[in-house]
Amino acid sequence: MTVLLRASPRNGGMVPPMDDSANPAVGIRAPARRISRTTTARARPSSVLLAYSPPGGMTWRSVCPITACAPLRPESLEIVPGIDARSPDVGFGGWKCGWRSTTSDTWVDLRFDRDQPPSAGDDGTPARFNDYPAFVEAEGDGEETCLVQVVYRSYTDDRGRIAVEKVRLAVGGSRPTDRLCQMARGLAGPATARLRAG
Image (cartoon, rainbow, N blue to C red):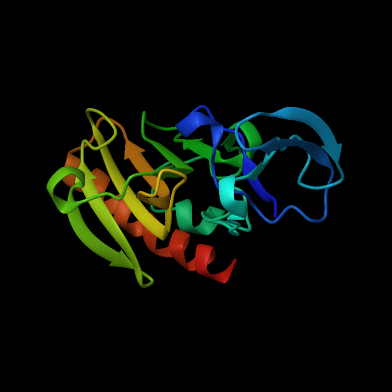
């Protein structure tokens, strides 16, 4: 069986795939760890996918049937003063999306990621948004930021370790961190609702 994964600079280029059945893109087939180029009629324009067949024939279907811009609609972003909600900065393959305020240095970034499970000891205060476990951390994405990490699902990686697919939602700017975290929490609610709806 073959699994489709998006290319990313993190974790060896593996980021969970979207449901890209309706649009053209470039695919890459990777039996075991060797990757060769091929073409397939899938995915949204400009999306680059990895088709990965892990040893032992394990197969799984992943994260988000949407791009990283989709969870936060313009009306949801209105809680961020001056945000330019209709002109997002779209990252490679649709796995990252950012928005900037036109009246201040406040910004919002949302991206899909795969990593080790977050924990309360290292990743902030536990929370839940639409039944998804999450962690909220002041300065979790650097100074003058607040980071919300939402765990979409867990899985066993090719080394037999537990890993997770997650959404990273960061808000930053020259504001008190409690205000940044208030906005991050306010965005995590509608973002996870959209994620659940697919």
